[in-house]
Image (cartoon, rainbow, N blue to C red; front, side, top):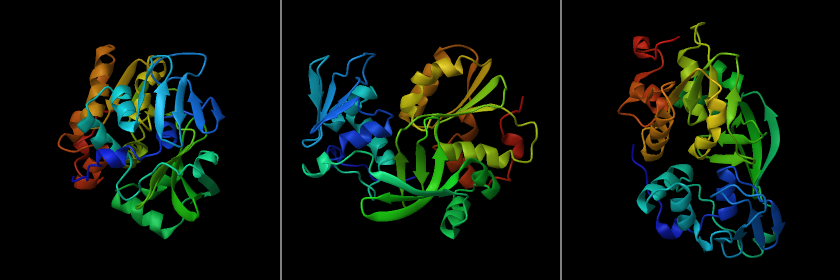
Length: 299
């Protein structure tokens, strides 16, 4: 699947406050033009990580380091610049950049997306979007809502997937975004087996192809961002078995390797969709009703 890689200059124009929100970080205090956070790099009680939004730069007073968004990204994700730019390109598609605001705009309250309405999915455009992603409509309506939102002066409509802190992941054929706060979604059925997915479309794909199989019962953890993988270990440790359905990219494979290092109860299930980036891309390529014998063995 071809993807346009964002340039370094364009990456450094992405608003740091919005990018931190996409990772689940909200400011501890705001003293315009500065946004203060508990450091993303370590545990602390007093916020020492500052974003000067008018200049779109950050500085960590605890370590005496700072820079632009790329400097933050390679340090936070522990990767090289090319890998981070590729990751950023998938999170902020070229047609939907989230650029840093002007100095005047920086005085406005952060969280640029306002929810106007939440209801069951009924719009034809979202129905067609689900069809292109090979997601069963009933399954989507069980786990998602139709969200009408306002961004700047424009109104949009998207699928909304709720997280455990009350935020939403928003997706449509032309939009990808998050209503803060960003967090994971844990769906409990009281089962001692946990299936872990990177994004909610992978989870919906799994549910779509298992909808008529009554034995397909597990608890589910949807990360909504791989930034939450290591932070979610305490939840994963509560289970006897943890099956990982993460992406075939550098970040997903790094998380899978980390999980496998934690113990034998962690299992890599990504071989199911070998040759495809993720579970949903595999489903799109073969169709949800084909080769059910190749699905993960139900326990």
